[in-house]
Image 1 (spheres, rainbow, N blue to C red):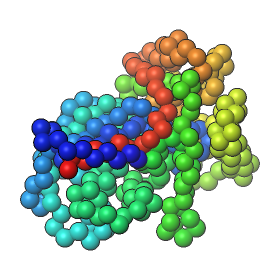
Image 2 (cartoon, rainbow, N blue to C red; image 1 turned 180 degrees about the horizontal axis):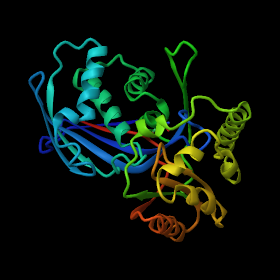
Image 3 (tube, rainbow, N blue to C red; image 1 turned 180 degrees about the vertical axis):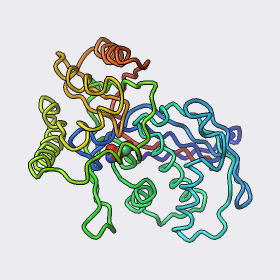
Image 4 (spheres, rainbow, N blue to C red; image 1 turned 90 degrees about the vertical axis):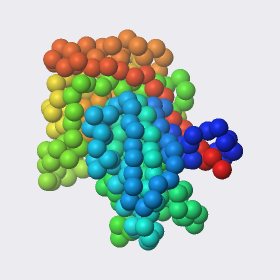
Amino acid sequence: MIIKKFNNFNNNYLFSLKVPATAANLGSGFDTLGMALNLYNIFNIRKLLPAGEFKCETSGEGTEELSDIKDNMLVASYLKACEKWNVDKPLGFELESCNAVPFSRGLGSSSTAVTAGVLFAKLINNLNNISEPELLRMMTLIEGHPDNVAPCFVGGMVASCWDVSAETLQYVKLPALPDDLYVIAAVPDFKVQTEEARKILPPSVPFKDAVFNVSHAALLCAAWAMGRWDLLKSGMDDKLHQPHRAKLFPGGEKILENIKNYKDCLAVAISGSGPTMIAIVKGKAGDLAAEMCRIFTAGGVSSHFFILNCAPDGVIVEINN
Ligand code: HSE
């Protein structure tokens, strides 16, 4: 997170948050690994309102789905964090959301809202004693798992998990990928709800598959920390969730199978619970991105792509004093 303070009476905002998309799981790291991407939702608070009053103007991704304030996850997260931190009658606000992160596509759009809602609870109520780990703990309690909210909040690539008592969230941030490595996000026009994508996972897995994932996730973290990008492909191999989830949308299995064999492709995975597919590429990414979209088209779904970088900083907060 980066905090910038400024004093601009012509500016219409009290607070402005620039909140990144994320790719969670990274193959082997189910529910534990994720990276921030330089594609952002922007949430501005124009003014504070009396307790219980909220207004929201949304543009961009998810505008239809977010038209009713009752469905607004940012407001719900704000209220939940205020309640947990014992804020009496939290003030309402007038919010402007400019969304670039595709909605329900596995790029962490809901995490941007949860992260922003929790940060607004701290900022609006001047809860200065709340530390970064406590903020992330609250975001994770609301979101359910840490692998999207952790990189969304702090940036880079993050490994995170609850400790054994499920009280403390442990996390370590690794640096972002170098700038000459690109992350293609191929986004089909097809929605997958995370809840549904979790329901199809088996209740138990063979011991050897669990060992496979533990060892590959460990390799991925070690390779990432040491800049051994040649090992990303192997490190992102997974037997826990992708074999089941790639069947949920046309093109998923084929992209997982085919794309990693292309020259310059360092790794391929389902982003979060899908259906967006990510590929990490060295050098020119356009041809591979087009190929990923061609596979979606052959499966009967239209799609579009982004060529992104891993974002080093997580949320960027601007406070107008
Ligand atoms: N780890 C979560 C899942 C991420 O795969 O269900 C969801 O975005």
